[in-house]
Amino acid sequence: MEHRTVVIIGSGPAGLTAAVYCARADLAPLVLEGAQPGGQLTITTEIENFPGFPEGISGSRLTEEIRRQAVRFGAECRFETVMDVNLLVRPFRLSTDQSRYTADALIIATGASARSLGLESEIRFRGAGVSACATCDGFFFKGLDVAVVGGGDTALEEAIFLTRFATKVTVIHRRDELRASKIMQERAKRNPKIEFLWNSVIEEVCGTEENGIRRLTHVRIRNVQTGETGTLHVSGLFIAIGHTPNTRLFGGQLDLDDQGYIRTIGKSSRTSVDGVFACGDVQDSVYRQAVTAAGSGCMAAIDAERWLSEFLDR
Image (cartoon, rainbow, N blue to C red):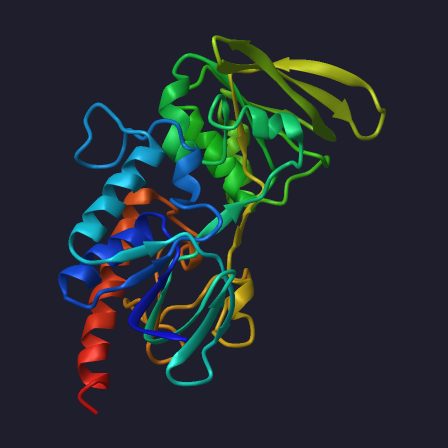
């Protein structure tokens, strides 16, 4: 069983930024990258709102650059998936699909997964018209028609935001009434660019493919009451049916909120277990941006460094 001073679970912008700061503090952090190295950013084709890249940068390239920076300062990254953790003992114990570790401090940056429609065609056009983040990708749909799937506050927030760019936004909801708060419903219904498609679900996401480049052109819709099908021509489809924080490993060991996100204490990254810190989307249900994840990764590293200086002096 290998012992490390700091282990970081997750390799998105939060985990890798934490690795940069921990490495610069001479803590020689170990990053366990998981099944999807780079996190959700790796399925984002172009990022134009991360500071320092005026021409934009792909998600995979951005995470690779942060990884290189972390390794340069002494971090070690391993393509291993954590299968089990024990936060009730000291040092903490972790088992991966390949090894076992102990750690004095643990930084959790496992992120959150956007819920999907479960369609194979949805996966095929992800990053080619299908998105789970209007703030990230709305800019690419200036003057185009788009659709948003969902009926909660998040869906309506996405729809309202998209009206800044899109010509028309169609909200597709499987029921005949929204789950969103009254104020959000009123705002959306007052917006002349937003239309609603009630009692409807998406059967298939369709588009073209030329020279290996896919482009969404329309979706096939089915009315859940009548069974009738139809076609909605859109250039963008935003799935807004919620996110699931990747906290399965920590149930019963860390304090989680009602949605399953890790609760952090005050304005820090500290969790309910001393020596365990959380950053990025696994503890942020509000912003979910690469830049905010990176910032919280910095916070977690600084918190861990300060905690370790006290812990190791005991």
